[in-house]
Image (tube, rainbow, N blue to C red; front, side):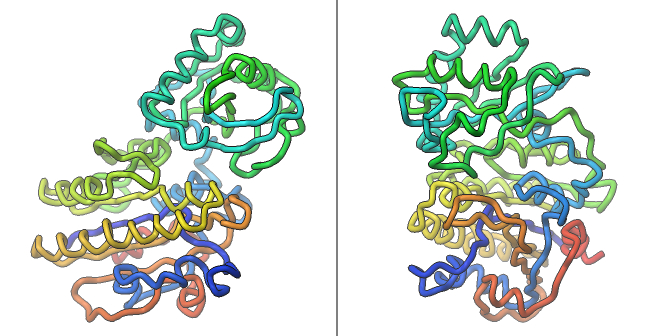
Length: 389
């Protein structure tokens, strides 16, 4: 028996008037998802009621780790995913290359949490120019704050743990169109952001935004808990970090970007390669629906869902059938990401369980149908349900 987990990040949403008062999932009624949803469908609370909504708390829950007891901050997970080891007394920070508009720092407005989609060599050139700026470099050095560069809008920052950093910044995707001066508390973080604002003029991404700090954490062995192991395929450092801290491999896939143009086929091939190498579990995480929601781009979110269905789910099911062994699939959104605001939501998400040994049919995978099915109040139960425990 083989076991497959597929996470469509931020897929779930609320009904939208321009989509006939349907959610994107209900509006599209995609065939691969409909097959997976034909047997067992319901809603799962992946974000505990007293936790902030996000992929960190939600995906920890999906992998069986209760964020209420193990979570120290998202950046600590991303540091593990990026291979950055935290020393005692250090805190990791997510550092977005953000885009703001305006010439005055206090009144500049947040336009894009990801630097208008900056990535690759452009992102590297941007962050390298920032680190080479004398004023910013001097300030970062005095604060003992280091940025580990990455070819994406997301960088990894490491600095000392201390009160001078002030209150942690909110997620930039939750405050599009707002003046950043009102969002920034007094302290060293504000000094860093302000210095970057003046150092990054002329770049598409024109300030850094350190947020979601976290100290080092440990997670229980996945194989020790469930008796299964295999690769976790994702372009996102957070997901890689959760996998690696659980003792699961997180291989790199060339062209996997976390954006709409990610290498969907490469992710499917990597999961199947894991099975052929002897693994009995694999996970594929697709970030694009979440990113398109943050960008408030309805058409691109719909396209991200279409590509997830046509370029991941349908070919993956065909390849799994071709391997010859029975298999089970858990498919779900980690959390809702709302097109109306670009923000994460903590409402329960639709999930489904599919077993290749059982008759398959067709049922639209969506929030409305899931609400008529079973209810799972603790997301930490889902992985055990996949394994039939």
